[in-house]
Image 1 (tube, helix red, strand yellow):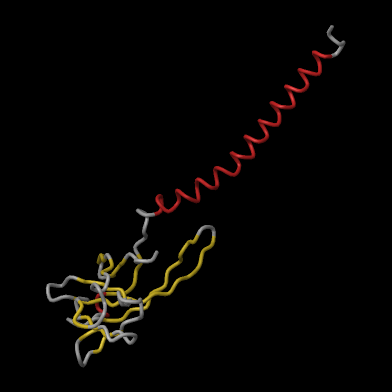
Image 2 (cartoon, one colour):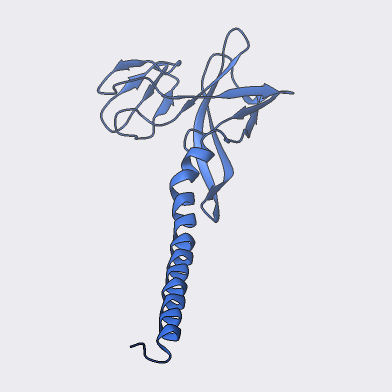
Amino acid sequence: MVLPGAKNTLRRRAFFVTGIKALAGLFGLGLGIPLAGFFLSPALKKGRQEWISIAEVTQLRDGEPTKITYRYARKDGWRMSETRRMAFVLKQADGGVMALTNRCTHLGCGVDWNSVTQRFTCPCHGGAFDAQGRVLEGPPPKPLARLPVKVEADTIFIQDAYA
């Protein structure tokens, strides 16, 4: 014996179950898209480094690294901030330009150029590097990092290592 209205109850129940599934799917999609963007954004950013104008070639001394402080706008997620960095730029004998980070490869301390000894020295653990950034002594495991450089119309551009 079928109760009157039993068919309606089944259709109503199926409607509510389908509606709940659809809402759960929309909720999951709403969370899934931002999460996918969060995990994929570093891979999409890698190839998009900007060239930063840091100096004119005329500011450099021949054969001796020049410490240059530069600023650039850095985007971190939705937040823009001005970042200040330092690099050593060297005009080489062949006229080319080379840029090195000012961070020791041992523990990241800031190195400085000593024009008397003609070497970069690290104040933290006594590491020393030559003008090309090669390790001379101390605990640093590898040379100072080189930054990509290009010169256009006497202006030096670099790509920041931490951008």
